[in-house]
Image 1 (cartoon, one colour):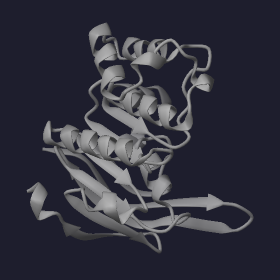
Image 2 (spheres, helix red, strand yellow; image 1 turned 30 degrees about the horizontal axis):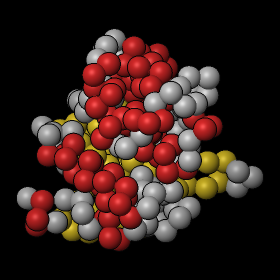
Image 3 (tube, one colour; image 1 turned 180 degrees about the vertical axis):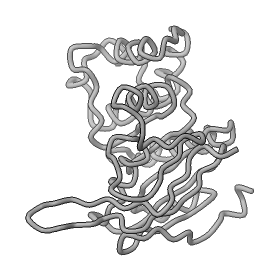
Image 4 (tube, helix red, strand yellow; image 1 turned 90 degrees about the horizontal axis):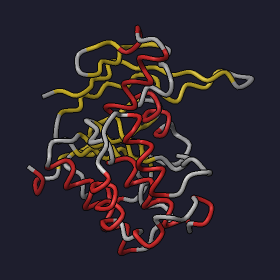
Amino acid sequence: MEICRLEHIRKDYHMGELVTPLKDVTLTVNNGDFIAVEGPSGIGKSTLLYVMGTLLKSDGGTYLFEGSDVSGFSDSARAKLRAEKIGFLFQDSAMIQALTLRENLLFVQSICKKKDPAQVEELLRQFGIEDRADFLPHQLSGGQRRRAMAARALIHHPALILADEPTNDLDERWSEEIIQVLKDQAKKGTAVVMVTHNSRWAAEAARRCRLEDGVLFETGKNEREK
């Protein structure tokens, strides 16, 4: 089943001059897809995820989420969609600094009107940060924060996970763990779109795309994932 579809999406920035990182992007994302988007730094990959996450509005084209055109959504409707349907694993994702790691996860559950403390504890264990559950975000290392953000992205069982360089700040072991978690989520039916410059991790995705000169090209499918 289709989760979301981008049709001829364009995004402009006015920075003294007109910059258009997304010129003509078309992509359909279905349940269970694990899609890697590759391309050099600064080309617009993160902008694409921000549009897909409704954090940025496009300047052209159509974006449908579960069949609804989000361009007509109010700010509150877009916020509700993000809270209920989308999990973010972004490089600049910020946790609430006054709350402990456990409290941050419980807070996300409360926003989604889901209360499951056992799931919080399970995610803390899964990502190897159960011993940091009562630490504040600034007391975590870079790798621990990255794993905490992964836990937060999964806490409300989203329909779509958007991951921006999810293995940054992680050693080999935890990079492999994060990629495996994303693959497992896809196998359970969650759609995953991951931006990465690492060809090794991109090769783990079922579908690979490349963003070049503002246009998204699908470059291949991983036969192992079919």
